[in-house]
Length: 229
Image 1 (cartoon, rainbow, N blue to C red):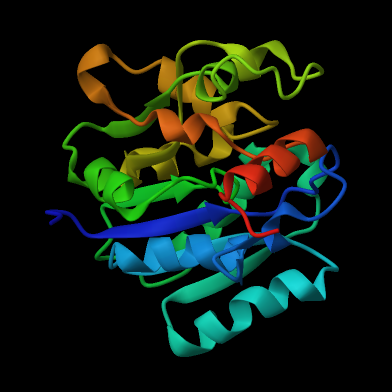
Image 2 (tube, rainbow, N blue to C red):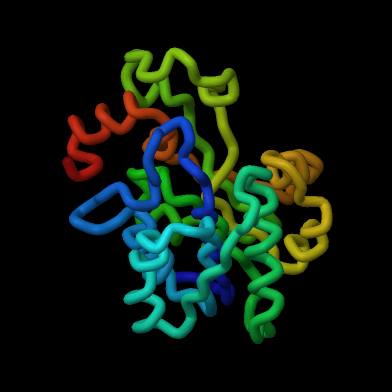
């Protein structure tokens, strides 16, 4: 299925301020979303899984504790300053991976937890790519919802027609080189833009355009049966 040994970093330390509740604990198929996504990561047979979580949320810790007990490759890292942005969470994830016995790892799969229609075949396809970065390509939320404006307050980034982003697979050595440059909320995307066209490829999956940021989006997702009511 895959020709390269890989690790997974799951970025799950967001504070979900626009949503008003922890998106990590939203339920899909009877499980907290963070646990559901960790199981997807496990299905790719990685060498290690690093989950970056926020502090002071015992429910989030509890949601992954049982899986971590069953699978020694799962490790959690606490982000003490999640408000500084996603790039810092990734920095912590890389640091945790480097501190493990990572000699077998040559690719890293980076994923979030709120792309609720993400599936295992898409992750497998990302990992099967040979380019330095194999990223997900998807269209705007407006396209996915068939024209219905679910979130009138969303920033312009959300409604770009073509997005290249998470989840993605990246060469581990390059990721370590980039670690020191990861600051703010758009560090990785900025660095990827500097690659040549021969170093990056995309796997298109329009379902990934639907993530959960607002109460309106959550309501719609429940109506569609994408999340449990």
